[in-house]
Amino acid sequence: MKYDAIVVGAGFAGMYMLYRLRKAGFSARVLETADGVGGTWYWNRYPGARCDVKSIDYSFSFDDALQREWQWSEKYATQPEILRYANHVADRFDLRKDIQFETEVQAATFDEARKRWIVKTTQGETFDAQFHIFASGCLSVPKAIDIAGQKDFVGATYHTADWPREGVDFSGQRVAVIGTGSSAIQSLPIIAQQAKRLTVFQRTPAFSLPAFNQPLTDEQRAETQRTYAERRAQSRHSLFGVPNYPMEKSALEVDANERERAYEEGWQKGELVGIMQQYHDLLINNAANETASEFVRNKIRAVVKDPAVAETLCPTSFALGTKRACLDTGYYEMFNEAHVELVDLLKTPIEKITKNGVQTSDRAFEFDAIVFATGFDAMTGAIVNVDVRGVGAVQLAEKWQAGPRAYLGLATHGFPNLFMITGPGSPSVMSNMMTSIEQHAEWITDCLVYMREHGHALIEASEAAQQQWVTHVNDVANMTLFPQANSWYMGANVPGKPRLFMPYIGGCGVYRDKCDEVASHGYEGFRLSIESAQSASAG
Image (cartoon, rainbow, N blue to C red; front, side, top):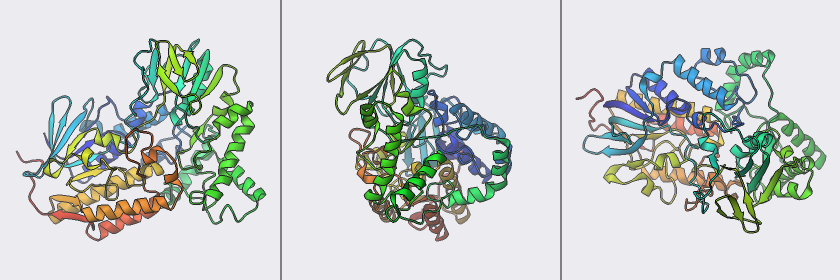
């Protein structure tokens, strides 16, 4: 089956990419492993799953009627509501007719003679396309569980990234949760309400801020609709893809009382960026950041009654913001419950999973159920899990063994006509993903239209431009505190993965301007070729 483009993934990125391609007159097919749209919001059904970007910002802006007709119910939408929104978008724009569900891409090979991509699925189908576009998400491949004996446990096991659709009732059970990242922090308070006994195994504590989630009022919705145009414009040219706050001062040029008032104001906003956007140097100066970090640690100490437990929950090995902070509802309060226990794996690491539970270096625990909240192979996992081979049959996974190399996070040298939405080297996970998804899909579509209008059949990132961009991404990162943290931004959560800061921290606005500049100069940094390629309608 021949198409102009094959798109991998039917989350928000794949759906919008399909919408743009169809509107521009390209034939496209989206291949999706799941049996429905939604991407990460299809798979992540664990209790408490909720977006950490405000609902009004975590939504499409490309169609004014769409953003006016959809009414969010809460400040931070839950997974079921976001999935309903994804399905609403798919239905509203009749996207399903060009999406093939329950189809897993196994391999993609660039046919140099025909200048086309040959895409094969695990079901044995073959697709033939001029362009191959990954829209498979930054957090879509769970990290492999590397704990000895995991198959020996006779009780029930769950992973937050592959939660049973029918849900789980932990009533009366002894439950272990391994991991304290975002999915654990969201799900733990709900699991605690059900479990007879809950044991939380923590290796590295996370900074978590209160969401102060609440239903949206009619007045708030009306104000959002009134200011949407301005809000969207600010987001597109902001640092994190959401409306900016002014950051005019250093945290070190004001006195402690003024800082405390500013941090309290940020805290009360109930937003990931609420504290971090109070001062301009919190992500570049350790001393400045420490004032904000200690503010949050003091908040934890004020909530958790047991001083030893509070200190175990206080992050001290990395700066606030250099690992993705979490938003919670009742997370720290949960540790005041008599049936909840915290185990510090830095002091007593897990040795193995046993038949009846978990064995640490000093104790044997018995459980009825174990929940693994162990994170993702972020940024690159969904791409390199496919056997992608470019010029000379070089495998992308091998090319990226020392770390991902991509020009603008959009394309990689040696793989013509292959694009990535929110790939490594773009703002992606450092931003509101919806802002970045729209920008990428629009840029890629404009590029394909330019090629069609100018008779170009091939486009490939030059090695020189790619290296310059990778160097720039790392230079900007090294101006900040981010590389000091062992985060999944750095690939540090996956054993053997090279340590490299993968997203671009220069900001959504700066990045957008760079992409626009590249396009305005005839796609500077790319090699365009007029070599003939068989069209989708050929044969």
